[in-house]
Image (cartoon, rainbow, N blue to C red; front, top):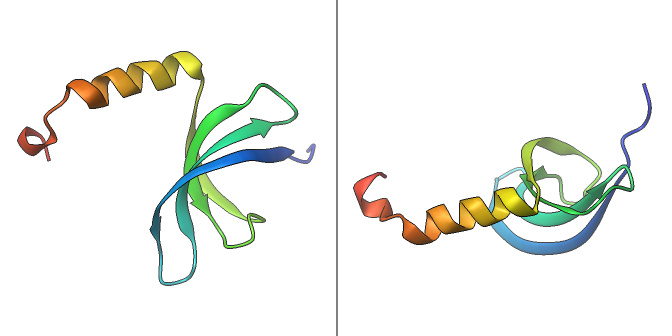
Length: 77
């Protein structure tokens, strides 16, 4: 199996941190030298290990942004 290559282009926000030092982050990442995408996942403190996450392209980020802007979370959470 080929090694997974990634480059964190920009850290946008740390959403939370566990007691073990893992952080749920939103980053812009290039996977396998591809086009950068928005990525949400858990990382260890050195960005060497990662958990499962969600990667979104530009159109998906726009759709999610519109949904978040138009939603009253008090009624659904």
